[in-house]
Length: 528
Ligand code: ADP
Ligand code: ZN
Image (cartoon, rainbow, N blue to C red; front, side, top):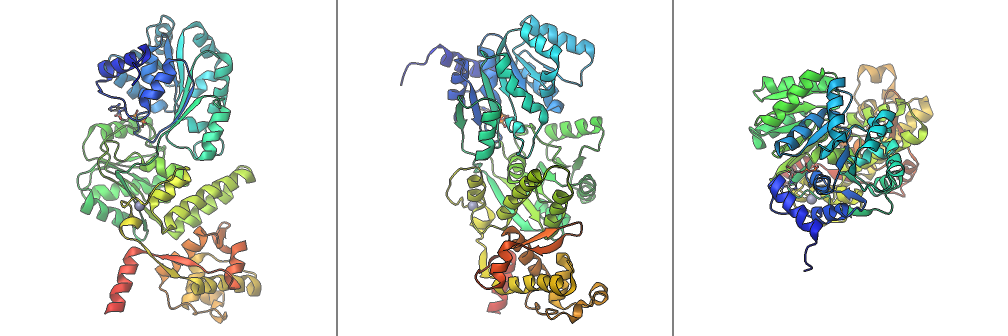
C-alpha cells in the first residue's frame, strides 16, 4: 500500500480527534481525500451512509470556511449545535435569525473564526450574501440534498437552480454535492445543472440490508398498524407517514388512545409545536411520530426501528428516502406500507387536477406508476427498488415477497370481465364509473345506485361472483399497475388504455399476484 500523503493522515487524524471515530466507512476516505486535494465530487450515498463527514472533514482540513448549502432550515440549529459540541466552529445564516444574530455570524465568517457555515439556498440569490462570501475565504462548497436541483425529481426546490452560479462566481473553490436519492436520470440532471460533469462521481450501493421491506393490502390501516406495533415493535421508536394532516392527527390520537406514545407532525402545526415534537422524538425512547412527508429530511436518529406508510407514497424515490430513516444503526428494522385501490384513485385525481404543464403531469404519473409496480411486484422488493436506481442485486431473502413468495394466477378472464363492463358502460350508456360501482355490477349487487342507473339490466351484471369484493379490488389495482386500465377525472372513473384492447381480444394474458394471506386461505380451503 502506498504511504498515506499529508491529506490522508490529516483527514484520519481529524476523524479520530474531532469525531471520535476509528475508521472511515465505505467511500468516505476516498471522497474526503479527493475534496481536500481540491477536486469536485458528486456523492450518491444512502441515508445513514455518512455523507456529512465527507464535507465536514475537508472543511476542517482545508484553510478557510466550508459553506454548506442545505434546504433544511429547521435543522440548522441542531446541526450547528451538534458540531459545536464536538468543538467545531459552526454557524448558520437563514431567514429565522434576527439582525444581531446574523451580524455576529457574518463577523465570525469574515474573521476566519468559523470552520463551517450553513446557508439556506435562497441566501445565495441575495446580493449582500454573495458580497459577504466574496470577502471571506471559502474552503469548499457542499451542496446537500443535491437532488433538490432536479426539476423532474420528487423534491424540486427552485432556489437550487441558482447553485450553478456558485461555480461561475468561485471557480477555484471545490464543490461537493451529496444526495441519498437519485435515479440514473436524476443523477445525470444533478451533474448537468450543477456543472459537475467533470467532477468525480462516487456512487455507493443504495442497499440497506437491515431494513425489511413489506407492502400489504390496506383494509383497516389503523388496526393493521396497531397489530404491527403490538406484535413486532413494542416500545420501539418509529415514524408513521400519512398523506393528509387530518389523517396524521387521527392516527396519532388513535395510537395514544391505545396506549402507544405518539405525537403528530405536519406543516399545519405551529413552528413551536413542530420543533417540540421533533426534539422529543430525537431525545426520548420509544416515541412514535405520525407525520406528513414534511417530517424527516435530515433527521438523524439511529434507532428508528420502523417506518410505516398508511398511504401510498407518490414516488419510489420518496418511499425509499422515507423508509431509509429506519435502522441507521444497522440493526434490523421494518419498512411497512399499507396500500389500497383508493390510494391510486386519489393520487390520479391529485395529478389530474394539479397545476402545471402536461409534461409535469406525465412525470408525476410516471412516478406513481413506478410506485404501483413496486407494490404489485411478485419479485424481491429490494431487487425492484435497487434496479429503479440503476443498481443490480440478488433476491434479498429479507422482504415480504422473498419470505413468503406470492403465488401468481391467471387473471385473464376476470380482467376481461372487468374491462368488458367498462366497455359496455361506455358504449351502451355513454357512462364512466369508478371501481366501486363496476365491482358492484360484476358481483350483481342491487344497490340503490345500481337500481338508479339500471345497471342490473346490463349483460355483464353479476358475471363476476367467482371473486369476492377485496379480490376484485386487487384485480383493479393490478390492472392499474400494469397499465391495462386507468383512472381519470374527479370521480376516479375507470377507463381503458391501449393495453386493454389486447386483453379483451385475448392476445394478452394477465398474470396477477395472489396476496400471501389469501393464498394461505385458498390453500386451507382446497385442502379442507
Ligand atoms: P447521511 O447524511 O448520509 O444520512 P450521516 O452523515 O448523518 O449520514 O451519518 C449517519 C450516522 O453515521 C451518524 O450518526 C454518523 O455520526 C455516523 N458515522 C458516519 N461516518 C462514520 C464513521 N466513519 N464511523 C462511525 N460512525 C460514522
Ligand atoms: Zn427480497
